[in-house]
Length: 102
Image 1 (spheres, rainbow, N blue to C red):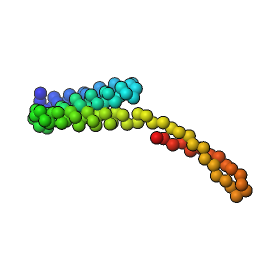
Image 2: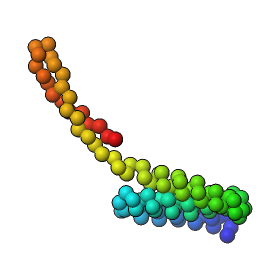
Image 3: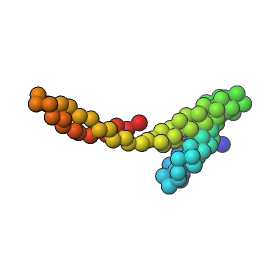
Image 4: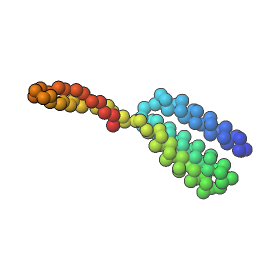
Protein backbone atom coordinates (compact mmCIF):
# COMPACT_ATOMS: atom_id res chain seq x y z
CA UNK A 1 0.00 0.00 0.00
CA UNK A 2 1.42 3.36 -0.94
CA UNK A 3 1.79 6.25 1.45
CA UNK A 4 -1.06 8.19 -0.17
CA UNK A 5 -3.26 5.10 0.06
CA UNK A 6 -2.56 4.75 3.79
CA UNK A 7 -3.34 8.40 4.42
CA UNK A 8 -6.58 8.07 2.46
CA UNK A 9 -7.50 4.94 4.43
CA UNK A 10 -6.91 6.75 7.72
CA UNK A 11 -9.01 9.70 6.58
CA UNK A 12 -11.91 7.42 5.56
CA UNK A 13 -11.63 5.58 8.88
CA UNK A 14 -11.77 8.80 10.90
CA UNK A 15 -14.77 10.14 8.99
CA UNK A 16 -16.70 6.87 9.24
CA UNK A 17 -15.93 6.49 12.95
CA UNK A 18 -17.12 10.02 13.64
CA UNK A 19 -20.36 9.50 11.73
CA UNK A 20 -21.05 6.20 13.48
CA UNK A 21 -20.18 7.51 16.94
CA UNK A 22 -22.58 10.42 16.59
CA UNK A 23 -25.59 8.12 16.99
CA UNK A 24 -24.23 5.71 19.59
CA UNK A 25 -24.54 5.66 23.35
CA UNK A 26 -21.61 6.16 25.68
CA UNK A 27 -20.19 2.62 25.85
CA UNK A 28 -20.60 2.10 22.13
CA UNK A 29 -18.80 5.37 21.46
CA UNK A 30 -15.87 4.25 23.60
CA UNK A 31 -15.70 0.87 21.86
CA UNK A 32 -15.85 2.45 18.42
CA UNK A 33 -13.21 5.00 19.45
CA UNK A 34 -10.90 2.26 20.76
CA UNK A 35 -11.18 0.11 17.65
CA UNK A 36 -10.94 3.07 15.28
CA UNK A 37 -7.95 4.48 17.15
CA UNK A 38 -6.19 1.11 17.16
CA UNK A 39 -6.67 0.65 13.42
CA UNK A 40 -5.63 4.21 12.66
CA UNK A 41 -2.66 4.03 15.03
CA UNK A 42 -1.57 0.74 13.49
CA UNK A 43 -1.70 2.24 10.00
CA UNK A 44 0.23 5.31 11.07
CA UNK A 45 2.79 3.24 12.99
CA UNK A 46 3.23 0.98 10.00
CA UNK A 47 3.69 3.95 7.70
CA UNK A 48 6.27 5.57 9.97
CA UNK A 49 8.34 2.39 10.51
CA UNK A 50 7.89 1.19 6.91
CA UNK A 51 5.93 -1.93 7.88
CA UNK A 52 7.84 -2.78 11.07
CA UNK A 53 6.02 -5.03 13.52
CA UNK A 54 7.00 -3.06 16.62
CA UNK A 55 5.88 0.23 15.09
CA UNK A 56 2.58 -1.25 13.95
CA UNK A 57 1.78 -2.79 17.34
CA UNK A 58 2.98 0.29 19.23
CA UNK A 59 0.90 2.55 17.02
CA UNK A 60 -2.13 0.33 17.48
CA UNK A 61 -1.76 0.35 21.26
CA UNK A 62 -1.26 4.11 21.43
CA UNK A 63 -4.07 4.74 18.95
CA UNK A 64 -6.45 2.51 20.88
CA UNK A 65 -5.69 4.31 24.13
CA UNK A 66 -6.06 7.76 22.59
CA UNK A 67 -9.22 6.76 20.72
CA UNK A 68 -10.78 5.43 23.91
CA UNK A 69 -9.97 8.60 25.85
CA UNK A 70 -11.21 10.96 23.13
CA UNK A 71 -14.41 9.01 22.43
CA UNK A 72 -15.21 8.84 26.15
CA UNK A 73 -14.76 12.53 26.80
CA UNK A 74 -18.03 14.20 27.62
CA UNK A 75 -19.60 10.84 28.31
CA UNK A 76 -20.98 10.98 31.82
CA UNK A 77 -21.43 14.70 32.25
CA UNK A 78 -24.14 15.48 34.76
CA UNK A 79 -25.38 18.90 35.79
CA UNK A 80 -26.12 19.42 39.46
CA UNK A 81 -28.14 22.29 40.81
CA UNK A 82 -27.03 23.51 44.24
CA UNK A 83 -29.12 25.77 46.43
CA UNK A 84 -27.18 28.50 48.20
CA UNK A 85 -28.21 31.42 50.32
CA UNK A 86 -26.83 34.53 51.86
CA UNK A 87 -28.09 36.53 54.79
CA UNK A 88 -28.57 40.26 54.37
CA UNK A 89 -27.96 42.80 57.10
CA UNK A 90 -31.53 42.42 58.38
CA UNK A 91 -31.18 38.69 58.95
CA UNK A 92 -33.24 37.61 55.94
CA UNK A 93 -32.09 34.69 53.87
CA UNK A 94 -31.97 35.11 50.11
CA UNK A 95 -31.71 31.90 48.06
CA UNK A 96 -30.12 31.40 44.69
CA UNK A 97 -29.16 28.40 42.61
CA UNK A 98 -25.83 27.55 41.09
CA UNK A 99 -25.46 24.90 38.39
CA UNK A 100 -22.25 22.88 38.27
CA UNK A 101 -21.14 20.30 35.69
CA UNK A 102 -19.04 17.34 36.73
